[in-house]
Amino acid sequence: DPKPRPTDASVSDFLGAVANDQRRADAAELNVMLTAASGEAPVMWGNTMVGYGAAEYAGSDRKQRAWPVIAFSPRKAELVLYLNTAVEDALFDRLGSHRRGVGCLYLKRLSDVDRMELRRIIERSVELAHR
Image 1 (tube, rainbow, N blue to C red):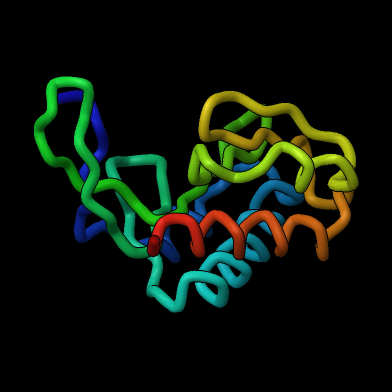
Image 2 (image 1 turned 180 degrees about the vertical axis):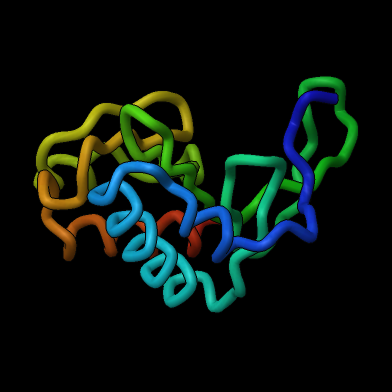
């Protein structure tokens, strides 16, 4: 099973080691946002994903698996947020410069987006995960 699992690795060490200064600052800000929205402490999932809380879901093979309620990864090219797939499309209309994939939101930098709109999307994702 290739899905990341929670580890005991240090989130602060991981975020502190992000090479790009702007990406590191954005990751620190996202960490604060996601902690506040989820009410959960950050945990490393695998080597590159910071997750908050956990929810069970059935995979395509119908086996139950844990996955973060919400998560992000400060990748070299962009920030990736892992959101609930049921977040309504309309919430992204006023966000600013971004791209999306199934359950993912890709941002070059936080200065490209409206922080209030981003908070709304994050809070909605967490809300949907707790249904």
